[in-house]
View 1 (cartoon, rainbow, N blue to C red):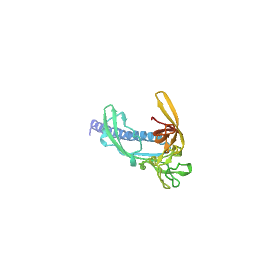
View 2 (view 1 turned 90 degrees about the horizontal axis):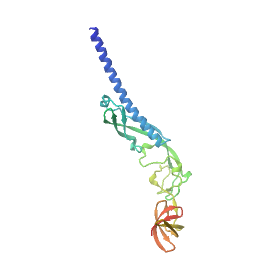
View 3 (view 1 turned 60 degrees about the horizontal axis):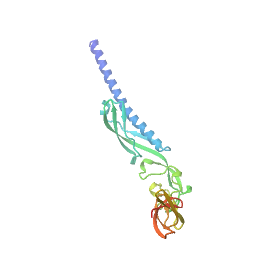
View 4 (view 1 turned 135 degrees about the vertical axis):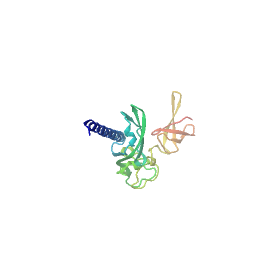
Length: 233
């Protein structure tokens, strides 16, 4: 075999090897880029969570395409079951898109009932404890901070050891049935206040029935703050 043919063969093998390595690195870089961005994103949203993300191997055809700038939309919340599918786009030098799939696990302590909590009860610190769970498997939501749940009212009875979700909670009542309140009514720039009586319990933002003690009329008013409602008669 001539020196020229050997040199050409070596050059061809080197070129093929370089092409394979470049493409393999490109695929790994894309997987690493997606993993890094997702980890940073969810670490900011759930600071106390231990997050592991595994992105499946990227389609081999992607390896043949050059790209200097990948992008994808970050999910607003943990995907149900932890399974994630992303549409990844290349914006330079050419525009094209592919899909990446993977699995996200995020472990953190969440609030569970330390004992049975009755419907309508205000949650106190000794009513809850925190247990480490995989947040990706909690499709109904969760609480990771005690201050986010203490002071809320139980919408229904909650059994011992039950993970507490936002659907189980209501804001605590600021007004109780039978107590004296102030009714505020706006008329242009003027705010008129009069004495009233609460006919229902109510939390902030809730509309309740109240009695205007001056006119003796029953009206509906929105709870503004403790002891104060806003209404238009």
